[in-house]
Image 1 (tube, helix red, strand yellow):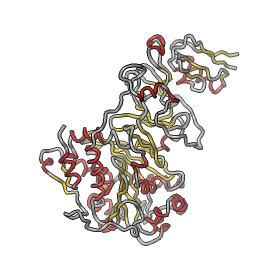
Image 2 (cartoon, rainbow over the protein chains, first blue to last red; image 1 turned 180 degrees about the vertical axis):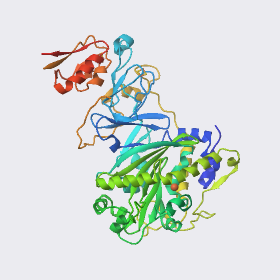
Image 3 (cartoon, rainbow over the protein chains, first blue to last red; image 1 turned 180 degrees about the horizontal axis):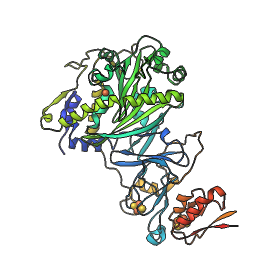
Image 4 (cartoon, chains in turn green, red; image 1 turned 90 degrees about the vertical axis):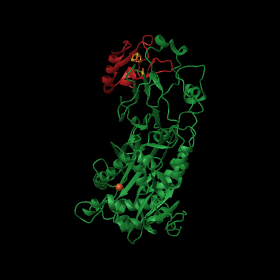
Length: 492
Length: 65
Ligand code: SF4
Ligand code: FES
Ligand SMILES: [Fe+2]
């Protein structure tokens, strides 16, 4: 494998070798060193609200059944049959108490345990030949959730999710905890674009600079009153923990006035006031910054915007969650969800959904504008000339790394991390610095799991798995959260 | 009243029955069918009939008593 240390060193200086946006070797390394290690978002708990609900989601090439089992625990099973490796569940979402492999008919309970193994006695001589007891679909090595957002990591030794998010959790609440009930998510819409996955993640993390240019038409038709050039530089970007984002500076007012300025009804504002900490309220109410787009390393992004609806001056806010799922070095599958406070009035939910569809999702106007650029960039990055080019991603800092505009002080910005007003690429650099850190660190090979056998080469996890439920390292699952709805069991 | 019956010797652990009527059938650790209940309500009856039909080794039956 090519030594990439020069590439990583350039990236850390904020000088980006253009070919990293379309380079097969880099992509191979990203697969191995980022996506087999980092926490990757797979679903929101509201998508699998009832026992038996499941969605099938991927971490690159690995398919997982993310399900709520009969006991209410959330689990992620590697979607590969223990027999000959067929994909066990081929639907994208549904409700099932059991999953049956279409190939030879082995079946599994929704907690992953094997249930049906046809002719176990005749074919294997029973337990003597194939240890059926305690066998289960391979669990995701690590599973955790925060504000209902379920993440998995393929690294059994991954840091706890909360530590991975770090202080970004402060900002995550604006999107996912506007009331004690949190959000509900709809979707996702799913489509593919011929662009490298990093471009979208960087753009949402901190590219306030593209808005006036790329999205001119949206501003011209009066859909959005905010992204005028001068307005974007008044907002700040912040980076905290493993994520960061952009904000808009709102006109004078207090917390209530500003939340109402972006279109929230009074009853929702009341709930936000009690759900957020004093500092979280201060960022909006006193400092005057309203969160907009954000990204969490490696490939999860958020949007909060408030476009004009109908012909009035009224605006309506919406939230969207999206994932940049890498397909190859030059193709990305975008998953885009609509998110809304579960306690919001029904009318608000409906209008907010419309606002979302107008702006984002496969038909959204912002989406169309953005993707044009990203596809073209990716194409151009494939050639030999791109290998000579180091893109300057140093906006906001001088040659000696001092800031063009000093960071906001704690008096100016109550949130954690570091924040800057003005045009800058702090967040793109932060994101790529994490990218470089991951690419630099080799991964240790994961232990193998042997199905149904005792003997040579067997490792600790396999033994624990065979011992089933009482094993000390029971597969990662999330505690049962009691839900209002009665658990309903239906066949697949 | 309909009653679910199973021939535990004949069962080959396919779990077709569990897929069809999970409230009535399960499979134990040895891979053999278990009757979670014997008395079948009217609502359950169609699912149980489906389970009976789906068993590849005809180990299940339903009897009216
Ligand atoms: S379907 Fe028949 S063979 Fe399969 S578990 Fe049920 S009773 Fe046994
Ligand atoms: S591959 Fe799944 S049952 Fe054979
Ligand atoms: Fe954009």
